[in-house]
Image (cartoon, rainbow, N blue to C red; front, top):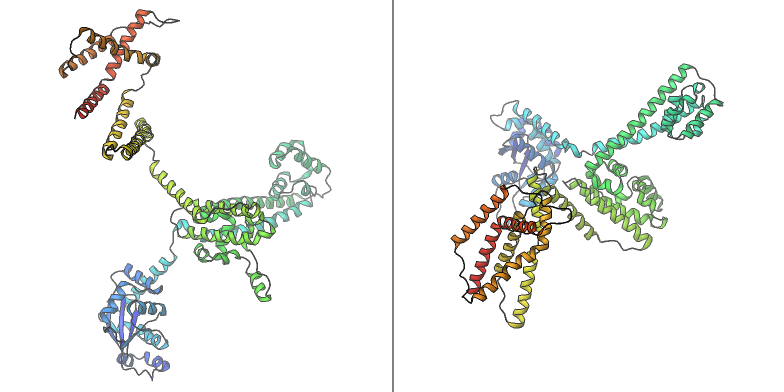
Length: 628
C-alpha cells in the first residue's frame, strides 16, 4: 500500500510519496538513522505535488484551520486533485500520513481517504522538514526562514489579539488587586492603631472605622495641643459634633505617653499612606464595576460585580466560565471540600464562591442548597449570554434576577414563578424595543420638526379606519341576514384615507390666531355657530316656495369665482380700515354686535375657501355616484 505524506509548511501544502517501504520491516530507529542522510532519504521519499499559499493572510487562515483540526476547501481540492482517484465500492490502495490526528480524522470523515498518524509517519515528516528546501526547486536560502518568521508572528499575534473593551484579563487582575488591598489596608490600619495608641489610647474606643481613625490621627498629632479651636475640624472629619467633643475631652485626661516630634512625623506619614491606600481601593472598585458592566453586564446584574469577577478569575476567563456546566459553577471555589468529601465519602459541598451572593443568605437553611443550584443555573446562562452576545445589554441579567427573586418567594410563600420561556421572550422583546427606540428617537432640529411630530401623532390616533371596519362588519351581517351586497375592501379603505386627509387639511387651515380678540371671537363662534348656519337655510326655502317658481338652477363656475373675488376684496378693505374699540365693560350694543357678526362671517368665508371648494367637489362626486 502506497503511503502519501502531507506536510504543511509556511509557504504552502506539499504532498510526498514514500515508496519502496516494507510494511513488515518498518523500523522507527532505522528510519531515524537514515533521515539525516539526504541520499538515502531522497531515494525513499519524493515530492508528488506542491500548492503554495496565495498571501500571508491566506497562510494564516490555513495555519489556524490546521491547528484546530479542520480541513479547508483549498486543502480538500489539493488532495482530491493530487491523490489517485478511488472507484466506487472499492477500497483505496493508499493511505495519507498526517501530523495532527484531529486533522486526519476530519479528512477521513469528509473525503473517505484513510489517514494515519504514528511514530513512523512523524519520523518521515521530520526528515521532510529537515530537507524541505532541497525538494522545492527555485527556492532561495532565506525565503523559507522569512516565511516561517512572518507566519509565526502573525499566528501568535492573532491568538493573543481580542476586543480591547471586552478583555476579561483586566477584571481578573483588578479583583486580585482588590483582595490584596483589603488585606493590606486592614493590616496597615491595625498597625496605625497600635502605634498611635501609645500616645492616645482612648481614641480607639471612640473612633471604630479604620479610615476615620487614620484621618483623626493625622489631624490631631500631639494630643496636648488639642483644644476647643480644633472642634470644627474634628466635626468635619468625624461627622458628629458630640463625638468631636468627646475626643477633645478624652485628650485632656489621656493616659498615653508623650511621643517625640520625629515619632509623631512618622505616625502622620504612615496614616497618610493608609488613607491613600483606602482611597485607591475605592477608585479600583469603581473601575472594576465599570469593567464588569462592559465585559459581563448580565452576570453583574444577576449576582453582583464582585462575585461575578471572582467567578471569572477562578475559571480563568469568561469563555472558560461559559463552558462550565452549572454543577461545576455551583462549587467553584470549594474544590478542597469537594475532593475531601469524595475521599472520605462524605457530603459534597453545596456552594462555593456563589455563597457570597445575597440570595443564598436570604434563603432559609433548608433551601440554601436548592437556591445555590438554581442560582448557579442562572449564572451559567448569564455568562454564556455575555460571552457570545455582541450587544452590551443588561436586560437578560435583570430578568434572570427577577426569576431568582420569584424562586425565593416560591420557597418561602409558595407563589408560583413564571416559566423560563416567557421570561426569555420578555427579555428579547425589551432588547428589541430598546433598539427600535434608539433608531427612531433621533434629535430633529427646528420647530417645524416638532410640528410634524405632533401631526404624525394625531394621524396615528385617528379612529377613521376603525369606524370604517366596523361598518364593514355590519354590512357583512346584513349580507348574511338579508342578502344585501357589502362594499369592497378597496373602496372602504379609500374612503377612510380620504376622511383622514380631510381632517388633516382642516387642522392645517384652522390654525389659532394670536391675540385676545381671536379668543373672544372663537367663543362667540362656538355659541352662535349653529344659529348662523341655520338662518340662511330657513330664509332661502320659504322664498322659493312663496314665489311658486321652479327651483333655481345651480350657479355657474364663473359666477362663483366672481363672488369669491368680491368677498376677498371686501375682507381686504375692511382689514385696511381703522377699527374702533367696541368692547364695553358689561357688553356690546346691537349695531356693533351685528357689524361684528358680519365681519366674522366674511373672515370665516375667506379662511375656509380652500376647505369649502374641496367639500363642494366631494359633494358633486357623491351626487354623481348616487345618480349612477
